[in-house]
Length: 145
Ligand SMILES: [Zn+2]
Image (cartoon, rainbow, N blue to C red; front, side, top):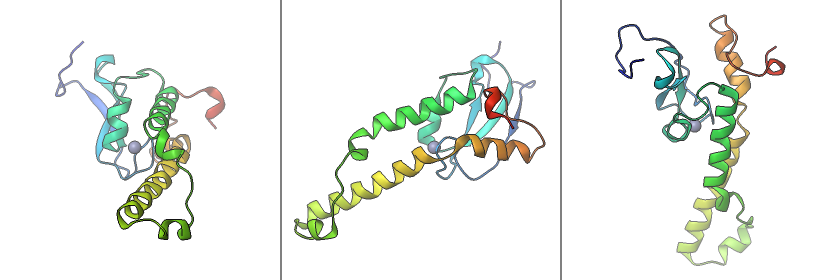
């Protein structure tokens, strides 16, 4: 089995959609699924850098578990910001300017992470495969329409 990225016999279908498969943020890189060590064939999914890095070689044979793994890691990574208390505008106004800035930044971050965790990756996956007339691979039978 070759690990060469440019192996002449490598064939992967490349999806050029604009959103990260795992979280819906703008896509920055291509995520190899299955990862290289599993073989030469498969898919190149749009992904943001962070999700691509987290996904790595985890769950190389199970796309649904891979998606869940990425979401779980994001949840753990941002646990503190996800669990910060909500602040009213009045409460924020009472703080010093630096603390105000800090709270607003973290509230925006919290909102962004919540949106990424809510992203329906399975529906997105089904849609991008439907566009090429195929069914997504390696999903539980109940997930496939
Ligand atoms: Zn992502």
